[in-house]
Length: 354
Length: 266
Ligand SMILES: Nc1ncnc2c1ncn2[C@@H]1O[C@H](COP(=O)(O)OP(=O)(O)O)[C@@H](O)[C@H]1O
Ligand SMILES: [Mg+2]
Image (cartoon, rainbow over all chains, first blue to last red; front, side, top):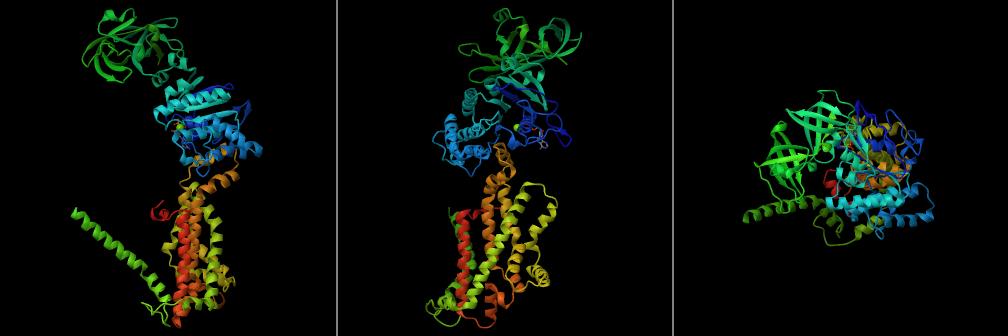
Protein backbone atom coordinates (compact mmCIF):
# COMPACT_ATOMS: atom_id res chain seq x y z
CA UNK A 1 0.00 0.00 0.00
CA UNK A 2 1.56 3.24 -1.12
CA UNK A 3 0.68 6.80 -0.06
CA UNK A 4 2.39 9.16 -2.49
CA UNK A 5 5.81 7.54 -2.71
CA UNK A 6 5.70 6.21 0.84
CA UNK A 7 5.14 2.47 1.22
CA UNK A 8 3.05 2.05 4.37
CA UNK A 9 2.47 -1.68 3.92
CA UNK A 10 4.94 -3.62 1.79
CA UNK A 11 4.80 -7.10 0.34
CA UNK A 12 2.54 -8.69 2.92
CA UNK A 13 0.88 -12.03 2.54
CA UNK A 14 -0.75 -14.26 5.11
CA UNK A 15 -3.81 -16.39 5.46
CA UNK A 16 -6.05 -16.89 8.43
CA UNK A 17 -8.15 -20.00 9.05
CA UNK A 18 -11.80 -19.55 10.09
CA UNK A 19 -12.43 -19.04 13.78
CA UNK A 20 -8.86 -18.11 14.68
CA UNK A 21 -7.71 -15.12 16.71
CA UNK A 22 -4.78 -13.44 14.99
CA UNK A 23 -2.88 -10.52 16.47
CA UNK A 24 -0.78 -8.17 14.42
CA UNK A 25 1.89 -6.82 16.72
CA UNK A 26 4.16 -3.95 15.83
CA UNK A 27 5.44 -0.55 16.94
CA UNK A 28 3.37 2.48 16.11
CA UNK A 29 3.81 3.54 12.49
CA UNK A 30 4.54 -0.01 11.34
CA UNK A 31 1.45 -0.09 9.11
CA UNK A 32 -0.98 -2.04 11.28
CA UNK A 33 -3.88 0.38 10.90
CA UNK A 34 -3.24 0.65 7.17
CA UNK A 35 -3.40 -3.13 6.89
CA UNK A 36 -6.74 -3.23 8.73
CA UNK A 37 -8.10 -0.38 6.61
CA UNK A 38 -7.16 -2.37 3.51
CA UNK A 39 -9.02 -5.39 4.84
CA UNK A 40 -12.04 -3.31 5.84
CA UNK A 41 -12.06 -1.70 2.39
CA UNK A 42 -11.38 1.91 3.44
CA UNK A 43 -8.26 1.89 1.28
CA UNK A 44 -7.67 0.17 -2.04
CA UNK A 45 -4.43 -1.77 -2.29
CA UNK A 46 -2.05 -0.23 -4.83
CA UNK A 47 -1.09 -3.77 -5.82
CA UNK A 48 -2.26 -7.20 -4.73
CA UNK A 49 -5.57 -8.79 -3.81
CA UNK A 50 -7.42 -9.57 -0.60
CA UNK A 51 -9.64 -12.63 -0.28
CA UNK A 52 -12.40 -13.16 2.26
CA UNK A 53 -13.98 -16.62 2.35
CA UNK A 54 -12.04 -17.36 -0.80
CA UNK A 55 -13.62 -14.45 -2.71
CA UNK A 56 -11.53 -11.53 -4.01
CA UNK A 57 -12.86 -8.35 -2.40
CA UNK A 58 -10.80 -5.51 -3.90
CA UNK A 59 -13.83 -4.34 -5.88
CA UNK A 60 -16.27 -4.67 -2.98
CA UNK A 61 -17.01 -1.38 -1.20
CA UNK A 62 -16.67 -1.39 2.62
CA UNK A 63 -20.42 -1.31 3.26
CA UNK A 64 -20.88 -4.54 1.32
CA UNK A 65 -18.20 -6.44 3.22
CA UNK A 66 -19.37 -8.51 6.16
CA UNK A 67 -16.65 -7.21 8.46
CA UNK A 68 -17.14 -5.83 11.97
CA UNK A 69 -14.57 -3.35 13.18
CA UNK A 70 -13.75 -1.83 16.54
CA UNK A 71 -11.90 1.42 15.86
CA UNK A 72 -8.88 2.72 17.70
CA UNK A 73 -10.99 5.64 18.95
CA UNK A 74 -14.17 3.53 18.99
CA UNK A 75 -16.09 5.88 16.64
CA UNK A 76 -19.40 5.29 18.38
CA UNK A 77 -22.22 7.47 17.08
CA UNK A 78 -22.52 10.22 19.70
CA UNK A 79 -26.10 11.19 18.90
CA UNK A 80 -27.43 7.67 19.47
CA UNK A 81 -27.98 5.56 22.57
CA UNK A 82 -26.01 2.39 23.20
CA UNK A 83 -28.86 0.27 21.84
CA UNK A 84 -29.26 2.49 18.76
CA UNK A 85 -25.55 2.14 18.07
CA UNK A 86 -25.80 -1.62 18.24
CA UNK A 87 -28.99 -1.64 16.16
CA UNK A 88 -27.46 0.51 13.39
CA UNK A 89 -25.66 -2.29 11.51
CA UNK A 90 -28.84 -4.41 11.61
CA UNK A 91 -30.93 -1.55 10.21
CA UNK A 92 -28.40 -0.78 7.50
CA UNK A 93 -28.19 -4.44 6.58
CA UNK A 94 -31.97 -4.64 6.40
CA UNK A 95 -32.53 -7.26 9.03
CA UNK A 96 -36.13 -8.03 9.89
CA UNK A 97 -37.24 -5.08 12.04
CA UNK A 98 -39.13 -7.36 14.42
CA UNK A 99 -35.98 -9.23 15.44
CA UNK A 100 -33.65 -6.25 15.76
CA UNK A 101 -34.65 -5.43 19.33
CA UNK A 102 -34.08 -8.99 20.49
CA UNK A 103 -30.76 -9.31 18.70
CA UNK A 104 -29.52 -6.00 20.16
CA UNK A 105 -30.54 -7.11 23.66
CA UNK A 106 -28.74 -10.43 23.17
CA UNK A 107 -25.49 -8.76 22.15
CA UNK A 108 -25.66 -6.13 24.88
CA UNK A 109 -25.98 -9.02 27.32
CA UNK A 110 -23.08 -10.82 25.67
CA UNK A 111 -20.85 -7.82 26.44
CA UNK A 112 -22.42 -7.58 29.92
CA UNK A 113 -24.32 -4.37 29.22
CA UNK A 114 -27.83 -5.72 29.65
CA UNK A 115 -30.05 -2.84 30.81
CA UNK A 116 -27.69 -0.12 29.61
CA UNK A 117 -29.29 0.15 26.17
CA UNK A 118 -31.01 3.47 26.78
CA UNK A 119 -27.85 5.23 27.94
CA UNK A 120 -26.27 7.80 25.70
CA UNK A 121 -22.67 7.15 24.74
CA UNK A 122 -21.29 9.97 26.88
CA UNK A 123 -23.13 8.55 29.88
CA UNK A 124 -21.03 5.38 29.74
CA UNK A 125 -17.57 4.77 31.20
CA UNK A 126 -14.57 4.04 28.98
CA UNK A 127 -14.87 0.30 29.54
CA UNK A 128 -18.59 0.33 28.83
CA UNK A 129 -18.05 2.28 25.61
CA UNK A 130 -15.56 -0.41 24.57
CA UNK A 131 -18.23 -3.00 25.11
CA UNK A 132 -20.79 -1.09 23.05
CA UNK A 133 -18.25 -0.88 20.23
CA UNK A 134 -17.67 -4.63 20.41
CA UNK A 135 -21.40 -5.35 20.40
CA UNK A 136 -21.88 -3.04 17.40
CA UNK A 137 -19.10 -4.83 15.51
CA UNK A 138 -20.46 -8.30 16.26
CA UNK A 139 -24.23 -7.90 16.23
CA UNK A 140 -24.69 -8.70 12.53
CA UNK A 141 -22.56 -11.84 12.84
CA UNK A 142 -19.74 -10.76 10.52
CA UNK A 143 -17.36 -13.16 8.81
CA UNK A 144 -14.45 -11.27 10.28
CA UNK A 145 -13.86 -9.04 13.29
CA UNK A 146 -11.16 -6.36 13.15
CA UNK A 147 -9.85 -4.74 16.33
CA UNK A 148 -7.62 -1.67 15.91
CA UNK A 149 -5.92 -1.21 19.28
CA UNK A 150 -9.23 -0.50 20.97
CA UNK A 151 -7.69 -1.10 24.39
CA UNK A 152 -4.73 1.25 24.04
CA UNK A 153 -6.45 4.12 25.86
CA UNK A 154 -7.57 2.11 28.90
CA UNK A 155 -5.72 1.87 32.18
CA UNK A 156 -3.75 -1.30 32.83
CA UNK A 157 -6.26 -3.14 35.05
CA UNK A 158 -9.20 -2.47 32.74
CA UNK A 159 -7.09 -3.32 29.72
CA UNK A 160 -6.15 -6.72 31.11
CA UNK A 161 -9.77 -7.38 32.00
CA UNK A 162 -10.91 -6.45 28.49
CA UNK A 163 -8.22 -8.62 26.88
CA UNK A 164 -9.68 -11.67 28.60
CA UNK A 165 -13.14 -10.43 27.69
CA UNK A 166 -12.18 -10.31 23.99
CA UNK A 167 -10.84 -13.81 24.32
CA UNK A 168 -14.03 -15.06 25.99
CA UNK A 169 -16.36 -13.47 23.42
CA UNK A 170 -14.26 -14.63 20.51
CA UNK A 171 -14.28 -18.21 21.80
CA UNK A 172 -18.00 -18.04 22.53
CA UNK A 173 -18.93 -16.84 19.03
CA UNK A 174 -16.08 -18.48 17.16
CA UNK A 175 -15.68 -15.38 14.99
CA UNK A 176 -12.48 -15.06 12.99
CA UNK A 177 -10.63 -12.09 14.47
CA UNK A 178 -7.71 -9.87 13.54
CA UNK A 179 -6.51 -7.79 16.45
CA UNK A 180 -3.90 -5.06 16.13
CA UNK A 181 -1.75 -3.92 19.00
CA UNK A 182 1.64 -2.62 20.02
CA UNK A 183 1.28 -4.32 23.41
CA UNK A 184 3.29 -7.55 23.35
CA UNK A 185 1.62 -8.83 26.52
CA UNK A 186 -1.81 -8.48 24.93
CA UNK A 187 -0.60 -10.30 21.82
CA UNK A 188 0.72 -13.21 23.89
CA UNK A 189 -2.36 -13.40 26.12
CA UNK A 190 -5.18 -13.32 23.59
CA UNK A 191 -3.95 -14.79 20.33
CA UNK A 192 -3.92 -18.14 18.57
CA UNK A 193 -1.39 -16.70 16.18
CA UNK A 194 0.81 -13.59 16.11
CA UNK A 195 2.18 -11.62 13.18
CA UNK A 196 5.00 -9.28 14.13
CA UNK A 197 5.24 -6.29 11.80
CA UNK A 198 7.85 -3.62 11.35
CA UNK A 199 8.19 -0.93 8.68
CA UNK A 200 5.21 -2.30 6.80
CA UNK A 201 6.62 -5.80 6.48
CA UNK A 202 5.89 -9.07 8.28
CA UNK A 203 8.81 -10.09 10.48
CA UNK A 204 7.42 -13.38 11.75
CA UNK A 205 4.16 -15.29 11.92
CA UNK A 206 3.91 -17.83 14.71
CA UNK A 207 1.94 -19.05 17.67
CA UNK A 208 2.54 -16.95 20.79
CA UNK A 209 4.79 -19.45 22.56
CA UNK A 210 6.88 -19.94 19.44
CA UNK A 211 7.13 -16.24 18.72
CA UNK A 212 8.43 -15.81 22.23
CA UNK A 213 10.71 -18.83 22.44
CA UNK A 214 11.99 -18.93 18.87
CA UNK A 215 12.24 -15.43 17.40
CA UNK A 216 13.34 -15.54 13.79
CA UNK A 217 15.17 -12.24 13.70
CA UNK A 218 16.60 -9.64 16.06
CA UNK A 219 13.58 -7.35 15.63
CA UNK A 220 11.18 -9.99 16.95
CA UNK A 221 13.57 -10.87 19.76
CA UNK A 222 13.79 -7.20 20.67
CA UNK A 223 10.10 -6.39 20.38
CA UNK A 224 8.76 -9.25 22.49
CA UNK A 225 10.18 -9.60 25.97
CA UNK A 226 13.30 -8.02 27.46
CA UNK A 227 16.25 -9.22 25.46
CA UNK A 228 20.03 -8.84 25.63
CA UNK A 229 22.01 -8.61 22.42
CA UNK A 230 25.63 -9.67 22.02
CA UNK A 231 27.62 -9.13 18.80
CA UNK A 232 29.81 -12.13 17.93
CA UNK A 233 31.60 -13.93 15.07
CA UNK A 234 30.80 -17.50 14.05
CA UNK A 235 33.59 -20.07 14.47
CA UNK A 236 31.92 -23.34 13.61
CA UNK A 237 28.51 -24.86 13.25
CA UNK A 238 27.25 -28.34 14.02
CA UNK A 239 23.68 -28.70 12.86
CA UNK A 240 21.89 -25.76 14.43
CA UNK A 241 24.40 -25.48 17.28
CA UNK A 242 26.82 -22.65 16.61
CA UNK A 243 30.08 -21.86 18.30
CA UNK A 244 31.04 -18.21 18.25
CA UNK A 245 33.56 -15.87 19.74
CA UNK A 246 33.04 -12.48 21.26
CA UNK A 247 36.17 -10.54 22.27
CA UNK A 248 38.07 -13.81 22.43
CA UNK A 249 35.51 -15.46 24.65
CA UNK A 250 33.76 -18.56 23.33
CA UNK A 251 29.97 -18.67 23.24
CA UNK A 252 27.63 -21.47 22.15
CA UNK A 253 24.15 -20.82 20.83
CA UNK A 254 21.38 -22.07 18.58
CA UNK A 255 20.88 -20.81 15.05
CA UNK A 256 17.49 -19.09 14.73
CA UNK A 257 14.93 -20.59 12.35
CA UNK A 258 15.03 -17.53 10.09
CA UNK A 259 18.81 -17.63 9.50
CA UNK A 260 19.72 -20.42 7.14
CA UNK A 261 23.38 -21.43 7.18
CA UNK A 262 26.31 -19.47 8.55
CA UNK A 263 29.55 -18.85 6.75
CA UNK A 264 32.71 -19.20 8.79
CA UNK A 265 33.67 -15.89 10.43
CA UNK A 266 30.22 -14.51 9.65
CA UNK A 267 29.19 -11.69 11.94
CA UNK A 268 26.15 -12.58 14.05
CA UNK A 269 23.82 -11.04 16.56
CA UNK A 270 23.08 -13.21 19.57
CA UNK A 271 20.03 -12.71 21.75
CA UNK A 272 19.16 -13.97 25.20
CA UNK A 273 16.09 -13.16 27.31
CA UNK A 274 16.59 -11.36 30.59
CA UNK A 275 14.79 -14.08 32.53
CA UNK A 276 16.96 -16.83 31.06
CA UNK A 277 20.11 -15.46 32.65
CA UNK A 278 20.73 -16.47 36.24
CA UNK A 279 22.55 -14.14 38.62
CA UNK A 280 24.60 -15.32 41.63
CA UNK A 281 27.17 -13.90 44.03
CA UNK A 282 29.70 -16.65 43.26
CA UNK A 283 30.41 -19.09 40.47
CA UNK A 284 29.55 -22.23 42.48
CA UNK A 285 25.96 -20.97 42.92
CA UNK A 286 25.38 -21.05 39.14
CA UNK A 287 25.30 -24.87 39.03
CA UNK A 288 25.68 -26.47 35.63
CA UNK A 289 24.75 -23.51 33.40
CA UNK A 290 26.77 -23.87 30.21
CA UNK A 291 27.89 -20.30 29.71
CA UNK A 292 29.15 -18.30 32.66
CA UNK A 293 30.53 -14.76 32.76
CA UNK A 294 31.53 -12.25 35.40
CA UNK A 295 30.06 -8.78 35.62
CA UNK A 296 29.56 -5.73 37.73
CA UNK A 297 26.18 -4.39 38.81
CA UNK A 298 25.51 -1.07 37.13
CA UNK A 299 21.99 -0.55 38.41
CA UNK A 300 19.29 -2.43 40.32
CA UNK A 301 15.66 -1.51 39.60
CA UNK A 302 12.99 -2.72 41.99
CA UNK A 303 9.78 -3.47 40.05
CA UNK A 304 7.76 -5.14 42.79
CA UNK A 305 7.47 -8.74 41.68
CA UNK A 306 11.01 -8.74 40.35
CA UNK A 307 14.28 -6.89 40.43
CA UNK A 308 15.87 -5.89 37.14
CA UNK A 309 19.65 -5.75 37.30
CA UNK A 310 21.73 -4.01 34.71
CA UNK A 311 25.09 -5.71 34.61
CA UNK A 312 28.20 -4.57 32.78
CA UNK A 313 30.05 -7.57 31.39
CA UNK A 314 33.66 -6.69 30.58
CA UNK A 315 34.55 -10.03 28.96
CA UNK A 316 31.83 -9.50 26.31
CA UNK A 317 33.05 -6.06 25.38
CA UNK A 318 31.41 -4.06 28.16
CA UNK A 319 27.95 -5.08 27.01
CA UNK A 320 25.17 -4.05 29.44
CA UNK A 321 22.97 -7.04 30.20
CA UNK A 322 19.53 -6.92 31.79
CA UNK A 323 18.84 -9.76 34.20
CA UNK A 324 15.66 -10.52 36.17
CA UNK A 325 15.80 -11.92 39.65
CA UNK A 326 12.52 -13.73 40.08
CA UNK A 327 12.79 -14.58 43.72
CA UNK A 328 13.35 -11.45 45.73
CA UNK A 329 11.91 -12.99 48.93
CA UNK A 330 14.75 -13.40 51.38
CA UNK A 331 17.15 -13.58 48.46
CA UNK A 332 20.38 -11.77 48.25
CA UNK A 333 20.13 -8.33 46.76
CA UNK A 334 22.94 -6.75 44.89
CA UNK A 335 23.79 -3.07 44.72
CA UNK A 336 25.66 -0.99 42.16
CA UNK A 337 29.35 -1.88 42.10
CA UNK A 338 28.91 -5.49 43.33
CA UNK A 339 30.74 -8.17 41.38
CA UNK A 340 28.33 -10.92 40.25
CA UNK A 341 28.32 -14.06 38.13
CA UNK A 342 25.88 -14.68 35.29
CA UNK A 343 25.05 -17.98 33.66
CA UNK A 344 22.78 -19.33 30.93
CA UNK A 345 22.16 -22.39 28.80
CA UNK A 346 23.42 -22.58 25.23
CA UNK A 347 19.98 -23.51 23.87
CA UNK A 348 18.62 -20.15 25.07
CA UNK A 349 21.13 -18.08 23.12
CA UNK A 350 19.54 -17.33 19.74
CA UNK A 351 21.98 -16.67 16.93
CA UNK A 352 20.94 -14.52 13.97
CA UNK A 353 23.08 -14.21 10.86
CA UNK A 354 23.60 -10.62 9.71
CA UNK B 1 -6.79 41.34 49.53
CA UNK B 2 -7.63 45.02 49.11
CA UNK B 3 -5.69 45.01 45.84
CA UNK B 4 -7.87 42.28 44.39
CA UNK B 5 -10.99 44.03 45.71
CA UNK B 6 -10.15 47.29 43.99
CA UNK B 7 -9.38 45.30 40.87
CA UNK B 8 -12.80 43.66 40.93
CA UNK B 9 -14.42 47.08 41.54
CA UNK B 10 -12.74 48.41 38.41
CA UNK B 11 -13.76 45.34 36.39
CA UNK B 12 -17.34 45.61 37.57
CA UNK B 13 -17.42 49.28 36.71
CA UNK B 14 -16.33 48.45 33.16
CA UNK B 15 -18.87 45.67 32.85
CA UNK B 16 -21.70 47.90 34.05
CA UNK B 17 -20.65 50.70 31.73
CA UNK B 18 -20.56 48.31 28.80
CA UNK B 19 -23.96 46.85 29.63
CA UNK B 20 -25.41 50.34 29.99
CA UNK B 21 -24.01 51.43 26.62
CA UNK B 22 -25.16 48.30 24.83
CA UNK B 23 -28.65 48.34 26.25
CA UNK B 24 -29.28 52.09 26.26
CA UNK B 25 -30.80 52.26 22.75
CA UNK B 26 -33.10 49.33 23.48
CA UNK B 27 -34.18 50.82 26.78
CA UNK B 28 -34.84 54.20 25.21
CA UNK B 29 -36.96 52.65 22.45
CA UNK B 30 -38.72 50.41 24.92
CA UNK B 31 -39.52 53.35 27.21
CA UNK B 32 -40.60 55.59 24.37
CA UNK B 33 -43.01 52.96 23.08
CA UNK B 34 -45.01 53.09 26.29
CA UNK B 35 -45.50 56.83 26.26
CA UNK B 36 -48.95 58.27 26.70
CA UNK B 37 -47.97 61.37 24.75
CA UNK B 38 -47.90 61.90 20.99
CA UNK B 39 -44.15 62.39 20.62
CA UNK B 40 -41.27 59.96 20.76
CA UNK B 41 -39.45 61.00 23.89
CA UNK B 42 -37.45 59.58 26.71
CA UNK B 43 -38.25 59.42 29.56
CA UNK B 44 -41.78 58.80 28.35
CA UNK B 45 -44.76 60.85 29.39
CA UNK B 46 -46.97 58.62 31.50
CA UNK B 47 -47.65 55.01 30.53
CA UNK B 48 -49.98 53.55 27.97
CA UNK B 49 -50.24 50.74 25.46
CA UNK B 50 -52.01 52.93 22.93
CA UNK B 51 -49.15 52.88 20.44
CA UNK B 52 -49.17 49.11 20.47
CA UNK B 53 -52.85 49.07 19.62
CA UNK B 54 -52.07 51.74 17.03
CA UNK B 55 -49.63 49.47 15.18
CA UNK B 56 -52.23 46.70 15.18
CA UNK B 57 -54.37 48.89 12.97
CA UNK B 58 -51.50 50.46 11.05
CA UNK B 59 -51.66 48.15 8.08
CA UNK B 60 -48.54 49.53 6.40
CA UNK B 61 -46.32 48.74 9.42
CA UNK B 62 -47.96 45.39 9.95
CA UNK B 63 -47.63 44.37 6.32
CA UNK B 64 -44.02 45.49 6.28
CA UNK B 65 -43.39 43.38 9.36
CA UNK B 66 -44.83 40.27 7.71
CA UNK B 67 -42.83 40.99 4.58
CA UNK B 68 -39.69 41.06 6.66
CA UNK B 69 -40.59 37.76 8.28
CA UNK B 70 -41.26 36.31 4.83
CA UNK B 71 -37.91 37.53 3.51
CA UNK B 72 -36.11 36.17 6.58
CA UNK B 73 -37.83 32.79 6.28
CA UNK B 74 -37.24 32.43 2.54
CA UNK B 75 -33.60 33.47 2.85
CA UNK B 76 -33.12 30.87 5.60
CA UNK B 77 -34.80 28.12 3.61
CA UNK B 78 -32.52 28.80 0.66
CA UNK B 79 -29.44 29.00 2.87
CA UNK B 80 -29.97 25.71 4.73
CA UNK B 81 -29.19 23.20 1.96
CA UNK B 82 -26.55 25.34 0.27
CA UNK B 83 -24.81 26.36 3.48
CA UNK B 84 -24.93 22.88 4.98
CA UNK B 85 -23.44 21.15 1.97
CA UNK B 86 -20.86 23.87 1.40
CA UNK B 87 -19.87 23.85 5.08
CA UNK B 88 -19.45 20.07 5.19
CA UNK B 89 -17.51 20.06 1.95
CA UNK B 90 -15.17 22.81 3.14
CA UNK B 91 -14.53 21.10 6.45
CA UNK B 92 -14.08 17.58 5.20
CA UNK B 93 -12.78 17.51 1.70
CA UNK B 94 -9.96 19.09 -0.17
CA UNK B 95 -12.04 21.42 -2.29
CA UNK B 96 -10.72 22.97 -5.46
CA UNK B 97 -10.57 26.78 -5.30
CA UNK B 98 -10.55 26.51 -1.53
CA UNK B 99 -8.62 29.77 -1.21
CA UNK B 100 -11.12 31.60 -3.39
CA UNK B 101 -13.89 30.30 -1.20
CA UNK B 102 -12.10 31.46 1.94
CA UNK B 103 -11.98 34.96 0.47
CA UNK B 104 -15.70 34.76 -0.24
CA UNK B 105 -16.25 33.82 3.40
CA UNK B 106 -14.61 37.08 4.45
CA UNK B 107 -16.65 39.23 2.09
CA UNK B 108 -19.26 40.31 4.64
CA UNK B 109 -16.48 42.12 6.49
CA UNK B 110 -14.63 43.57 3.55
CA UNK B 111 -17.08 44.66 0.86
CA UNK B 112 -19.24 47.62 1.85
CA UNK B 113 -22.87 46.50 1.77
CA UNK B 114 -23.79 49.45 -0.36
CA UNK B 115 -21.44 48.07 -3.03
CA UNK B 116 -22.90 44.59 -3.12
CA UNK B 117 -26.37 46.12 -2.82
CA UNK B 118 -25.89 48.16 -5.96
CA UNK B 119 -24.53 45.12 -7.76
CA UNK B 120 -27.56 43.05 -6.81
CA UNK B 121 -29.87 45.93 -7.73
CA UNK B 122 -28.38 45.98 -11.24
CA UNK B 123 -28.72 42.21 -11.59
CA UNK B 124 -32.32 42.02 -10.44
CA UNK B 125 -33.17 45.25 -12.24
CA UNK B 126 -31.98 43.78 -15.52
CA UNK B 127 -34.00 40.66 -14.81
CA UNK B 128 -37.01 42.88 -14.21
CA UNK B 129 -37.51 41.37 -10.79
CA UNK B 130 -37.38 44.51 -8.67
CA UNK B 131 -40.40 45.20 -6.51
CA UNK B 132 -40.90 41.57 -5.60
CA UNK B 133 -39.85 40.00 -2.32
CA UNK B 134 -37.93 36.95 -3.47
CA UNK B 135 -35.02 38.96 -4.88
CA UNK B 136 -34.63 40.54 -1.44
CA UNK B 137 -34.53 37.10 0.15
CA UNK B 138 -31.97 35.87 -2.36
CA UNK B 139 -29.88 39.00 -1.86
CA UNK B 140 -29.91 38.51 1.91
CA UNK B 141 -28.92 34.91 1.37
CA UNK B 142 -26.03 35.78 -0.93
CA UNK B 143 -24.71 38.38 1.46
CA UNK B 144 -25.10 36.47 4.70
CA UNK B 145 -24.42 32.90 3.54
CA UNK B 146 -20.86 32.96 4.90
CA UNK B 147 -22.29 33.04 8.43
CA UNK B 148 -24.22 29.86 7.71
CA UNK B 149 -21.19 28.19 6.19
CA UNK B 150 -19.05 29.11 9.18
CA UNK B 151 -21.52 27.68 11.63
CA UNK B 152 -21.71 24.37 9.75
CA UNK B 153 -17.96 24.19 9.17
CA UNK B 154 -17.34 24.66 12.88
CA UNK B 155 -19.39 21.62 13.79
CA UNK B 156 -18.31 19.56 10.79
CA UNK B 157 -14.63 19.93 11.59
CA UNK B 158 -15.27 18.38 15.01
CA UNK B 159 -16.69 15.37 13.20
CA UNK B 160 -14.16 12.57 13.19
CA UNK B 161 -13.53 10.92 9.86
CA UNK B 162 -13.71 7.53 11.57
CA UNK B 163 -17.40 8.09 12.28
CA UNK B 164 -18.28 7.85 8.60
CA UNK B 165 -15.97 4.89 8.10
CA UNK B 166 -17.64 3.21 11.06
CA UNK B 167 -21.02 3.77 9.40
CA UNK B 168 -19.73 2.21 6.17
CA UNK B 169 -18.39 -0.68 8.20
CA UNK B 170 -21.87 -1.07 9.71
CA UNK B 171 -23.18 -1.53 6.18
CA UNK B 172 -24.37 2.00 5.43
CA UNK B 173 -23.97 3.12 1.80
CA UNK B 174 -22.76 6.72 1.28
CA UNK B 175 -26.25 8.29 1.18
CA UNK B 176 -27.36 6.60 4.41
CA UNK B 177 -24.08 7.51 6.06
CA UNK B 178 -24.71 11.13 5.17
CA UNK B 179 -28.31 11.10 6.39
CA UNK B 180 -27.87 9.12 9.58
CA UNK B 181 -24.38 10.08 10.69
CA UNK B 182 -22.94 13.18 9.03
CA UNK B 183 -26.07 15.30 9.09
CA UNK B 184 -27.00 14.69 12.75
CA UNK B 185 -23.42 15.43 13.70
CA UNK B 186 -23.50 18.86 12.04
CA UNK B 187 -27.06 19.61 13.12
CA UNK B 188 -26.07 22.04 15.89
CA UNK B 189 -24.16 24.05 13.28
CA UNK B 190 -27.12 23.98 10.90
CA UNK B 191 -29.50 25.21 13.62
CA UNK B 192 -27.10 27.94 14.64
CA UNK B 193 -26.57 29.03 11.08
CA UNK B 194 -30.29 29.00 10.27
CA UNK B 195 -31.28 31.15 13.23
CA UNK B 196 -28.44 33.49 12.46
CA UNK B 197 -29.58 33.74 8.85
CA UNK B 198 -33.12 34.38 10.04
CA UNK B 199 -32.11 37.20 12.37
CA UNK B 200 -29.84 38.77 9.78
CA UNK B 201 -32.57 38.51 7.14
CA UNK B 202 -35.09 40.08 9.48
CA UNK B 203 -32.81 43.01 10.19
CA UNK B 204 -31.42 43.58 6.72
CA UNK B 205 -31.83 47.23 5.81
CA UNK B 206 -29.39 48.61 3.29
CA UNK B 207 -29.80 45.96 0.60
CA UNK B 208 -33.57 45.93 1.01
CA UNK B 209 -33.60 49.67 0.64
CA UNK B 210 -32.04 49.32 -2.79
CA UNK B 211 -34.15 46.38 -3.94
CA UNK B 212 -37.65 47.23 -2.75
CA UNK B 213 -40.23 49.59 -4.12
CA UNK B 214 -43.40 50.99 -2.54
CA UNK B 215 -45.22 47.66 -2.87
CA UNK B 216 -42.59 45.57 -1.19
CA UNK B 217 -40.99 47.57 1.62
CA UNK B 218 -39.64 45.51 4.48
CA UNK B 219 -39.99 46.68 8.04
CA UNK B 220 -36.60 48.37 8.53
CA UNK B 221 -37.17 50.29 5.30
CA UNK B 222 -40.72 51.16 6.31
CA UNK B 223 -39.52 52.51 9.65
CA UNK B 224 -36.81 54.47 7.92
CA UNK B 225 -39.30 55.98 5.49
CA UNK B 226 -41.61 56.95 8.32
CA UNK B 227 -38.86 58.61 10.30
CA UNK B 228 -38.24 60.93 7.40
CA UNK B 229 -41.77 62.32 7.63
CA UNK B 230 -43.10 62.39 11.18
CA UNK B 231 -41.69 60.53 14.12
CA UNK B 232 -44.53 59.05 16.12
CA UNK B 233 -44.27 56.58 19.05
CA UNK B 234 -45.82 53.79 16.97
CA UNK B 235 -42.39 53.46 15.36
CA UNK B 236 -40.94 52.79 18.79
CA UNK B 237 -43.67 50.23 19.43
CA UNK B 238 -43.04 48.33 16.17
CA UNK B 239 -39.31 48.48 16.88
CA UNK B 240 -39.96 46.81 20.20
CA UNK B 241 -41.95 44.05 18.49
CA UNK B 242 -39.07 43.68 16.09
CA UNK B 243 -36.52 43.47 18.89
CA UNK B 244 -38.67 40.87 20.64
CA UNK B 245 -38.68 38.72 17.50
CA UNK B 246 -34.91 38.84 17.28
CA UNK B 247 -34.77 38.15 21.02
CA UNK B 248 -36.95 35.06 20.61
CA UNK B 249 -34.66 33.77 17.88
CA UNK B 250 -31.58 34.33 20.05
CA UNK B 251 -33.24 32.59 23.01
CA UNK B 252 -34.13 29.64 20.81
CA UNK B 253 -30.54 29.50 19.64
CA UNK B 254 -29.31 29.48 23.21
CA UNK B 255 -31.76 26.79 24.24
CA UNK B 256 -31.05 24.57 21.27
CA UNK B 257 -27.33 24.77 20.87
CA UNK B 258 -25.94 27.23 23.41
CA UNK B 259 -24.64 30.66 22.62
CA UNK B 260 -21.15 29.90 23.83
CA UNK B 261 -20.21 28.57 20.40
CA UNK B 262 -20.32 32.19 19.23
CA UNK B 263 -18.21 33.37 22.09
CA UNK B 264 -15.36 30.94 21.61
CA UNK B 265 -13.90 30.45 18.18
CA UNK B 266 -14.40 26.78 17.21
N1 LIG C 1 -3.41 8.49 4.44
C1 LIG C 1 -2.08 8.45 4.62
N2 LIG C 1 -1.27 9.23 3.86
C2 LIG C 1 0.08 9.18 4.02
N3 LIG C 1 0.72 8.39 4.90
C3 LIG C 1 -0.03 7.59 5.68
C4 LIG C 1 -1.46 7.58 5.59
N4 LIG C 1 -1.93 6.68 6.49
C5 LIG C 1 -0.85 6.18 7.11
N5 LIG C 1 0.30 6.72 6.63
C6 LIG C 1 1.66 6.38 7.06
O1 LIG C 1 1.80 5.00 7.01
C7 LIG C 1 2.56 4.52 8.11
C8 LIG C 1 1.82 3.44 8.84
O2 LIG C 1 0.71 4.02 9.49
P1 LIG C 1 -0.31 3.15 10.33
O3 LIG C 1 -0.84 2.06 9.48
O4 LIG C 1 -1.29 4.08 10.93
O5 LIG C 1 0.61 2.55 11.47
P2 LIG C 1 0.21 1.89 12.87
O6 LIG C 1 -1.26 1.69 12.90
O7 LIG C 1 1.00 0.62 12.90
O8 LIG C 1 0.68 2.83 13.92
C9 LIG C 1 2.87 5.72 8.97
O9 LIG C 1 4.20 6.11 8.75
C10 LIG C 1 1.90 6.76 8.50
O10 LIG C 1 2.47 8.03 8.62
MG1 LIG D 1 -2.72 2.45 14.36
